Image (cartoon, rainbow, N blue to C red; front, side, top):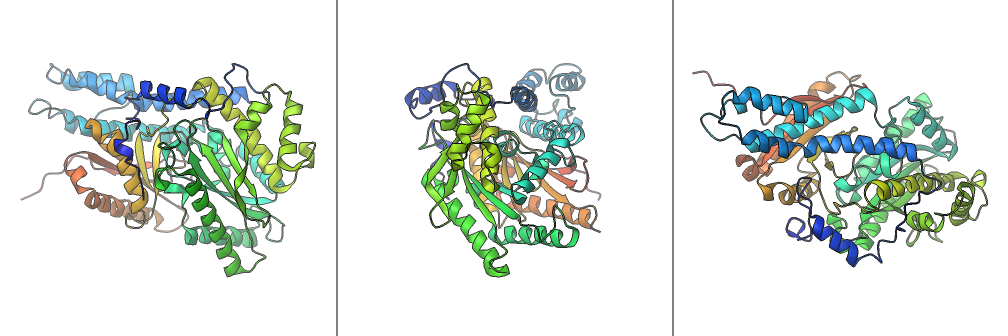
Length: 509
């Protein structure tokens, strides 16, 4: 996969503790004609301001918990030879981060320098554990299964003729929030699988389609099989309006047209696979969406004359935002309807047109979110992820530049995705002598006998493969892993079953 020298690029952001603010500001000035968001304090009349405030509070709370790690460890490093060091260090960590540090690492400070790399990884893993606990216990995004938001949205999908929404965003951490923030979709109402370049596995997706249709036949969930609804598959690729030649999709060499082309190719192959295997009546709906990682605005590709996806003809939510900024709510809604289908009101919209209307209205709130809380365009235009997530799961991660996803069953098959992540973190962390924190996750169904034990074995298997593939980093303490599992049939958070940082037991002689 072409990476365009990601880790060495001079405009490659060096993580949450060292953003290259000066260069970013220069980029903004050089590309002010490309980044077309209107610079005004006015909020769009379709924006949900109360929701924006709540979402920002959550984003700020979670990201600050990770960003406090380095300052806290610097404070602890300065006192490692002081009297009563361990108790003082624990007090500082508890106060700043809300976590305890591992005694078996602190206890060695009298005989050798503190292993700051190990402490950094430990803190990252423990902050993820807190994130997971909070997410599943408190539902901070109001999107859990059975919530009013989820129930309303699922009813809306069925009204649009959609019985399941399946989205594949790129693994890039700048798209990790694309469901809950950019599209404002309840996380429990969508099937999300992230892949580098949004290049999803066709066979696996067909298998998930089969399971969905089987459930409709057997249980009439979410609706009966005879109902005239479709399985909607969406691919979300990404681009940068601020620095298009360098901050686009790494998997496609920052080539926006190539990213869109390859996304369409995967979508059409999936549809063909379903129709060839289960006849033309078993068709699916497809949608290709481009996400500007600087403004969070969307480009929704329209259908071409032959019924396929048009790579050139798109609806831009940012253009709509700008053109309707001074409109009343009703006027803005009518304008969006006209652009989508020539209708004069949202009541006249049907099917995918109705879905696209909601997507654009939701995204207008996100454009104002970025405008208010991030000055119209994110300062971290490049990568600034805090950890790599590997395996199957991570339902709790819905924040931009928090996690790079490598969705995989085995390291061998997921190597391209994982290698991209390690390359990114070589620039973010290793270049600063900080380790790469890798959280391994395998969700399982508690209803299936032995599933938990198999998930544990999957974690161990992937952990061993990572240790072999990136041995040089592991041997230097520059890559640490945390093994987690979660019962997907339960609301409980992820459970840590082991770490590369665990205290080694003494061998018996």
